Image 1 (cartoon, rainbow, N blue to C red):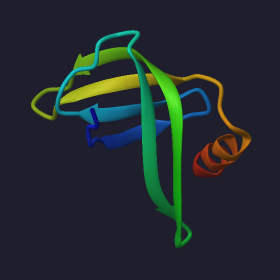
Image 2: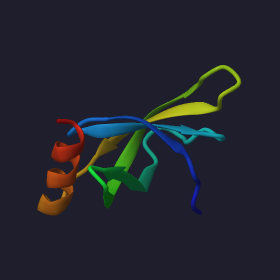
Image 3: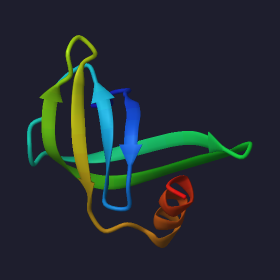
Image 4: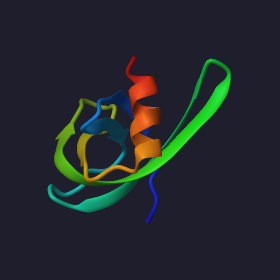
Amino acid sequence: MAHNGKLVDISESGVGIMLDDPVPAKKVCTVMCETFMDGKRLSFGARAIAAYSVLAGNKGYRIGFQFGALEPATSKIIADLIK
């Protein structure tokens, strides 16, 4: 099942995403991200584990995902994003 959310933050080890619904802790998911940087479309997918799911007022749930092993190309994209 796919859910659309808003990327809140990203690091080499994981992402924070706002979703309308909670995700159970330790649930394994595939996180797909798409953004633009310097006029280029960047996208990646990575397996991740939900570390936490916290209600964030009336904005929805902030979900913290911890990445598993990343492909080299995905690691490069993430490194470029966090520069």
